Image (cartoon, rainbow, N blue to C red; front, side, top):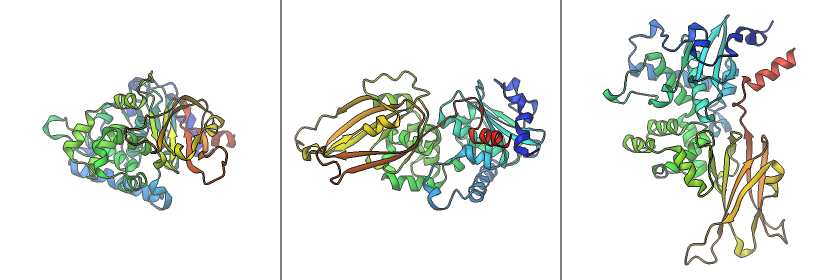
Length: 377
């Protein structure tokens, strides 16, 4: 019997897990590896970063086009030999377990995608760094991943500091931040605005706080600015983008602000996310954006309008403002066109996106691993 086919049996105790009391005792919160005690915080951080660099190199995440792409952390877990499972854990975010010699990682379906991805990287860090089985709650999201904030913050056990540093560096390596800044035309001063940090977090596939910490780590922003940015609430940033449109679930739903700068971007969103397209439209020359492609791809148009032209700028391009929601899972290229209706092929402006819906809110085995098991049965 193959290793992958044994995994569901070995992890069967976790399939109905809801809290730490349902998990194997070996991964209960608070369990510590005695060999880790005494390691300095700096050593723990450096060990976590070295582990992340090693795995990035082994999986070739740091070469070619991969350098500019968000890290497929769920796929990396599978490629590292662990079984990945999603369950409605509460209040836990996730756990790293080892049963009958098989490594497994469980993630809660009850958190937004960015939080799931950071938790996944944290648990992957426990695996790669050789830690004991462990379960984690929301504490991993509230603390800085590289150092405690002076005497005001409680000390973090060494293996937790290692997993924090691993997760931060693995999901947000310096080269990914640099490549995305170049693609988007972001300069350090743009990150003084919480709205920009929030949109960056969606493209990185990380939480807002994790993104602030990584920008601070790479000296894109200073520590004082980082503290200011952490005081902003993503739910408020989402509502500011939407104007008078009522957002019913501000914790679970993200709002993607898409412009011409997103040409060629990979948009991996949760199924309930909203997309605000703000596209310059040369209406004075007869050009208009057409959105038949959106409807054909499975999007519902919730709002469609044009922003008022600023006083004194008559004749300037207008801004088309369209709010959409995907009515079915997405997986493929989407190309929008700005055309003259009477000459649609006359030098159209194009915006091409690769859209993919994440399925991490569904309980069960990670979909590619499930498909592999079904194919082998």
